[in-house]
Image 1 (tube, protein in one colour):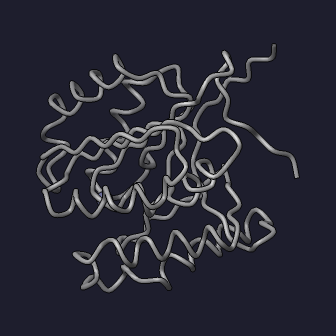
Image 2: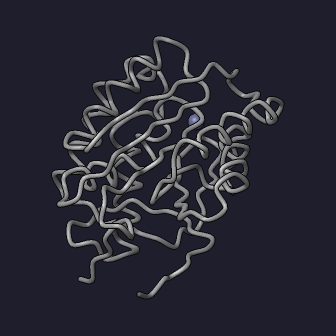
Amino acid sequence: MQQWQLLRGDGGTPDVLCIGAHCDDIEIGCGGLLRQLCAGRSPPAVHWFVAVAPAARATESRRAARALLAGAARFSFEAHKFVDGELPYAGAQLRRRLRDLARRLSPSLILTHWHGDAHQDHRCLSELTRQTFRDHLILEYEVPKYDGDLGRPNWFVPLTAATVTAKIETLRTCFASQRDKPWFEERTFRALLRLRGMECRAPSGYAEAFHISKGVWKAS
Ligand SMILES: [Zn+2]
């Protein structure tokens, strides 16, 4: 299998910026990728940005992030208090937060919501991410939901069986506030990982999938 490595041009530590509307979005969308990156030979520094993060839920997400990012070169967590479901109406303020991020960070990789996501908060954040970070590699992750909006992703990350177990265990143990939601269960997470694993012939049978709109190959 060919491997693609996330390295900065200067050989330094890569930086990964994770952007999520709600606590648990990043974990569901790309928890496996993050875990494998952090367990690799060049673990990145990771910055976590969550827009809608009431205190109790932020605590859950911080705990989950720490579990998934074991081995990261650095980890920083940024939680904001935007109102659930109303991100499109707070676009200007949210855009300023992201522009502030762009002044502080120049990540090698940005992970954010898929621009075709049916949830208005997810879609808004994805759009603002693209508008703010125009020269960066952006992978858009997917979040399964009642609306049935799964698309046709074009970038796959095969996961090891151990990563799948760790991801699902993290979701199961860290998000007590979500346990009453009928979809928030192992079957949902595993089913999607299995489907994407089948689509990319993952050796373990499991993968996470992303949408990439544009990529630039800089040959040296
Ligand atoms: Zn969400």
